[in-house]
Length: 139
Image (cartoon, rainbow, N blue to C red; front, top):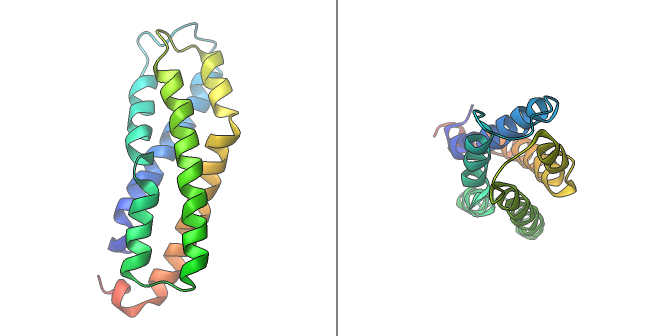
């Protein structure tokens, strides 16, 4: 894997791991998060989501990927979906207890699903574009 994508890969992994953990947690029927790692997964996802669009934008700008306008438009979508997902996750984290039902509702959130889809698309595009760039491939 291109070292250029390491930060994006790590962010994607944290968000995806959180989502997968939440899928399992949602099915357990827990009334609260006592003794669970759900909060730590959500906190890690928050950190990964915060600044995600900026990190992707920096990479796109560094490699002057074209057409720039198309990348900027997508980054605006990514930023919006990230902010919406952050708001939903922060709301859940603000609760005194986090039940399986609450996590199931978060999993169903269109905002979180949109962010995951954005990440898959972004990662695929960047992987293809940067592997085609001889300068990036040697980084």
